[in-house]
Image 1 (cartoon, rainbow, N blue to C red):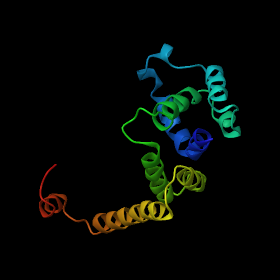
Image 2: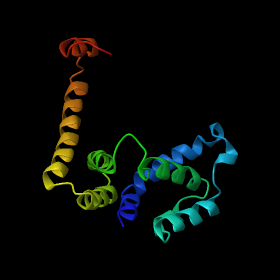
Image 3: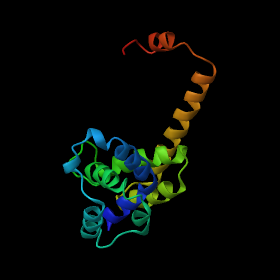
Image 4: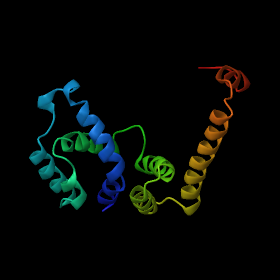
Amino acid sequence: MIRRIIFARHSVAAIVTGLTLALAAPVLAEDAMMTPDEVIKDVETTFGGVPTFVTKIAKSALPGFWTLEKGLELSETTALDAKTKALISLAVASQIPCQYCVWADTNTLKQLGASDEEIAEAVAMAGLTRFASAQFYGLQVDMEQFRKDLGGGQ
């Protein structure tokens, strides 16, 4: 059930990323990509069904979408755990904004045991980052001075 919800929460973001990956497909080994029919079968095997939105994705983008979805969001072997990925996704989705992702990410987070405070902080951090970025960018804060003020580094 959690895998199904996690899959649904990134439908829009993953579609866009999948489209990007599909455009980069010539860089990838062509024979490593699944065919659209293989993707549909794998989605059905993975989730016990095929969500309607998957059937709406362009066949040319579907293999890239599924490769990214399965290798990043659904993978349990990435550097980030599922809850951290969902908190990041919610923060980004709240700023894009993407109502589909916000709804799905929030539901996923609740199933993964996130507290209301964790969810609120993820959204607050997104808002703070956007506010600070607007201030620094709009006021044309000098990047070199900014780096010096914060202790140098890269």
